[in-house]
Length: 128
Length: 335
Image (cartoon, rainbow over all chains, first blue to last red; front, top):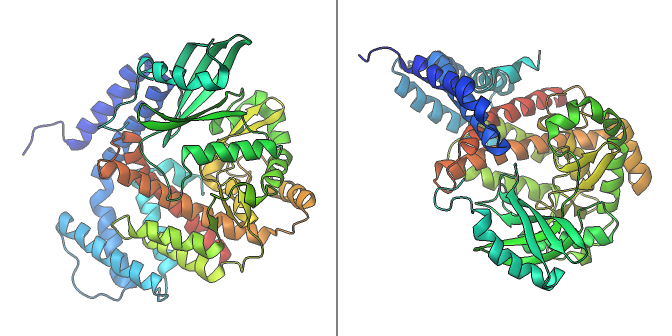
């Protein structure tokens, strides 16, 4: 077991350093933009550490229902990610073959919204 | 920036650059200033102040960067040729001065450096540009009308891309990503079923939107960034500035965050005698979101493969979900 700060706290510390100490001293607009992008990348990482596991579990559950899979859903997060990748490949192939399961659009809206909860939560608010 | 080739310093570039400028501007010239400008994911843009016997000229040197966003991007030489043809056709473009060949190993051309705001977020927000925003919809329609009237035989290097070809190219790009993207597949499947039977193929700018225009207080100054020029359905170009990513946060104004679509479309149809419908724009807006979602994912692969390590490209891979969400939102509406 690692000592604190944990992974999310460490990412947050680096992001806060960039935002409060690095950014104010940057005049070059190109470097400034990329520094903002870097801070945003750390924000994505913080949210993924907090939300990643429950969201991928929800995605695998939804994919399994959509594709009529009955096998049990794994507990291990790496196992869940592999399962999500496999099921997404199967869904993508069925859509391309013109055989999208009933409920595909609703499943994708919910799943992509979950991606945005990590990648860009403020963007998601623009649809309310 | 690419790991293998860090950005060139101005001093490294200037010697070779000056030599190439002599045939265009004469031997009595001196580089007063040369600085790399912001923006441009796949191309460098250098602001160049050149002293000539007639006075100092404000120029722009466009030079190849690390890679391309889409397959089918024009070479710098062809982009320069397209600028020349567009300029002769009366399109408001920065005056092209010449293709320079390779400078420090990468192709480049030189053009006039034009004034005006190019940052999309500022164009849709700044109070002092309110008058420009009112003028832009009609002006964008006018420039598109002129571009679409360019005789195709003047630009034989432009690839012809029908509605179905656009979709097969996008499918190929998805296949190169290496993982599955069901939301994009659903959009491609919809687009294949709804693709228009094409009536007409014209010269297209390929990327005309807020963010690729130099905007002054009176509106559209110049049309920039011609690297995606190709031939295709005129509605593809007319719909592109509607894509939500190009509204820069002002989502309720469907035309680029600056105006409503109807007056813009009416002006375009009146100038061209075409009858592009709102339904046709709906189709091409969905395809536009597909294009940009796949473009963002493809850019992130340039980082992941090591072709061009960049935090900006890395984060774009995650932001593709924004375009996927908009795509699904539009598919729900179209259903």
